[in-house]
Length: 262
Length: 309
Image (spheres, rainbow over the protein chains, first blue to last red):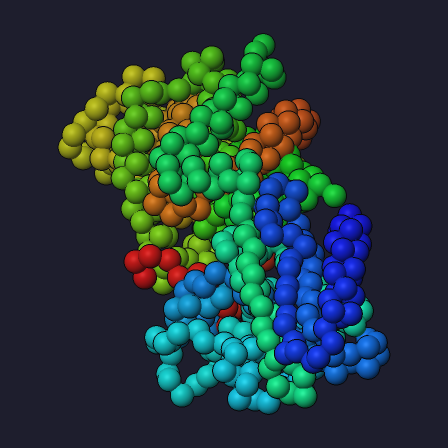
């Protein structure tokens, strides 16, 4: 289904790109534009994660064939920030329990970097740091707790987020399709947080940032999932009573069906 | 296929697995005549449901099974309502305390270990006692000896406490303090473990309060309805850790499984049932203990920061 949508989407873009290439006679500075295959992601009961495709197109592309490949592209997807506690287990009286912890006030709920080749080779360290590209360049805010010097907490936070597939770095995930069109696909796992996501597309040439483009997408619970979630958090008393009512009804029905003659 | 996204647990589970789990617990509880919460909550935790959600949702499931169970007992006139209400008053106090305690420990990051630890201790003790008792009973029936009964009307220190109340159905005139305390303990356990607490109430009523055996199960089921209902609502309001979709799946499975369990239970002898149950309780306890003492694969864990911590 996604593939089909992709082709429909690509056709006019390719056309547009070639028209622009003819029009551009004198070399103009390259501009990048981007879009996302799915701007609204709905989480409902059959949600098991979703693949989204990010497209970028280069206006005034100075290349004649995709093989020539003077351009590099990096794409990032960033979910809403939230505070996260990282805890380290220690052994107390033979039992493993949570010991020291460190709190990071603003950790992106989702973060992915896609690149047309290993992104650390695309641009120098300083540029990447300035643009906040890559796990090591993420700012989680001023952390509280822990023993300061030990950065095991930050490294573990990144590692665990990666294990939960909430942090992803994938080189070679962006591919150039035509002279001026490229795409990258990201797999949003089932546990993605809800909220507004921002996507950024950076275009590089010879390790220099030429242009960037930004767009956003929204992840929301819909239908029954949304109703339950809203009820549980906004009207929690009604939600609890509803759960009890459901259980009592089930118990009464069970009695009526199976135990009447006991 | 059959994956269902749980809105509060925020994970995707297999519909059939959860229905099956509910049915298995329903089967066991129908067979043994117990609530099954002490097996359900650990099994939910083993299948990846966060402990706080497993406890709250487990309590909700028990409401359903105890309603149908209590109705059966009520029709047979086996509920001492007065005793039940006294237990409930104590139970509500205990439940509030328990839910607040779990909420606090959850914010501090100790809830998982605490719940597991309390489980290991209680299941370990109860499982061992049941194992010894049922092995003795099996041995007694083998050797053809009659079970020794307790002397009726025997007085203990419990009968000398003040605040005496007449419990007609139980044919008792005792202080309200022991049932109140018993209720409180059960409420606390119900809240921390997501269980009905029948495994504590039933023996305590028989051995400590000397309530006649035929009244014990009905009265216990009656008070369990209210305690678990209160625990469910408290978790929903204070901790937001109740997943109604998961509860619904477990309830449906449980109702169906319970009917088959009750039929299967009639074919087994009492002491054999208790032996089987004891083995299962001990197995769950050991599994939880292993989880606590074996060095974890990953020393670090993440948790979203919740308000108030």
